[in-house]
Length: 623
Image (cartoon, rainbow, N blue to C red):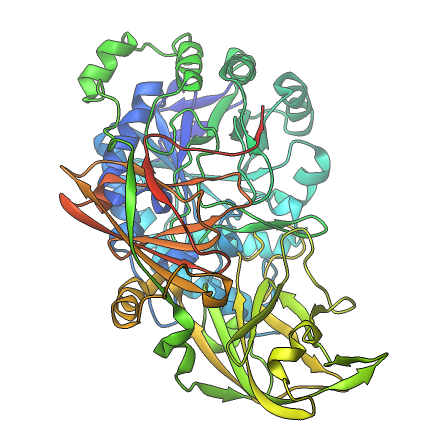
């Protein structure tokens, strides 16, 4: 069969009829699988005729020898559900996706080869991509409209003009898609100007553009640079994402709807980025780098028209009103009733969450067990650790020197730290380094001063042997720009006085997979006596709440510090008191009738209060 969607000088034809693509981005890997159909129906209710999704390679291949298309990775089921709801599909398989997703979708394990070049015709890289596409593309191919499915468009790479101009690489990806059976429309997407389009386009793929404002200016540019073809905004940035420590972003529906009206009114197809943002569950949020690391929050609400919990916003209604001028839609309430969406998403009532036990993690087996010895501190990628924490430990000798009448101990210097580190000497927390906005580099090592603790470390002066433990945290690999593919760890080594320290035991803590293990450690560990303080850090915190029936909730962690939260063993994500995010979305499928277990691993503060909230809470807001 010929491709269902065909570009012409006049616009798109779908099955021979003039067609505007009105698509909404909804990433299957950011939504609990039990909620996929609900969220797809909300796209339909807004007036979309198409759904768009990226494919996150690192979701499907968490390790070199592991490939999965099950659970939240079941792309085929997601596309099938979209078809059942009457939606065409645009699939953007990458291999690079950006998406504010860890490493731009690339698995961390491919960075184990220090010489490999990402997004380039490097033979080692292409070999890995081809092997991955051999497994992925058949899932898409068999669901193309030409074969009775709903996939009408497949993208070659992603915003490549913002990274490189290796035309041989783009041609390799294009030819690989065709060779693996893709016969629906191929596209590229890039920034809205010639400088991006000259690097990111490739013959045989329709060029589309990404932008969030000044639609009429962009349309004029596109008609000049991309004449004689349908124009499409592949990413209409109608909201924005948040970084930890920065303001929460919001954009009014009326202003964004005005841009939408300009596009649709002039025959420009559109994909809302995002229609429904969802959640960066676990530790899969990426990061930007603009002079310093900018980690993305767990929430990917994006101020989208369909909120993180599925609520229909003012922006949803504003967009639907514009779309209804170009597609015949039933009245909203009637449409919602038809789709079974009249009721707002159910949410547990606000309540306190009882903290039942606090225990120091340093007293558990995770801090004391022996680990493999490495000549230098290994990077996360050297030991197959995708995300989480890396514990480094060894013994060192420290000595007191008299300077101006006071006892001084040489500091520890952590060179090329990515991203944060907590240091303990003989169990004493002596410092942390690598905060957001002040990432350390080779010429400016993160320095951990030991002198303030001289009285405790060397009460009698002189010298002695102590044990150093360092917890290194990956805050998210960069997903956009020249730092894509950065490695994590203390990449330059640990320096003391006159030399580097070698021979470190290294223990990987893949936190996303450790919910049950940490719960067991909490059960075995003695509770902190009295009021736990900073000397107890890091701590495990056990708590619980009751639910009459499964429903959405928001875990209020505003009284906690910095760490990772689990609900019933599932890692719902990272939290951080620097904001703006103050609550973690917990979808109904994770909530049980009756008792629900909450576990926090907090690195910075002993939480005094946890609660359930009925809606998201964000701190500072950029309105």
